[in-house]
Length: 150
Image (tube, rainbow, N blue to C red; front, side, top):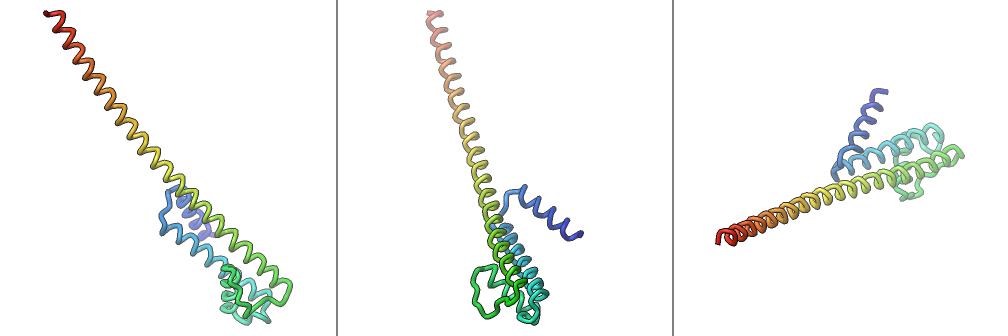
């Protein structure tokens, strides 16, 4: 149970902070590995005649989650086929969701950076205009002083 809390905290931190490409790749690798290991163990337990060891089960899960499907090992029991369907759906859906979250985070970060640069630029333009108005006001005051003094 402690491991899931650590994973959950890291995932929360990952989703709050702007991700790097390295972190994004790490999440995808870990998610895929979890699906492959879990699917491999589960298929071994439910269809042990076709999958005599966990290694073969994980090989099948890797083929299934990546949608390669060589066909060298296939589930023969209904329970194995159900595990296969779950691995396919979980693998593709989870990877799609993670990819969408990462992409939306990148877009949000880019938008924030663009808006910050735009705001900074707008302040600079505003300050420049104010300086020009101040300069014009000084010149007008100087002209008015000359005209009044002459």
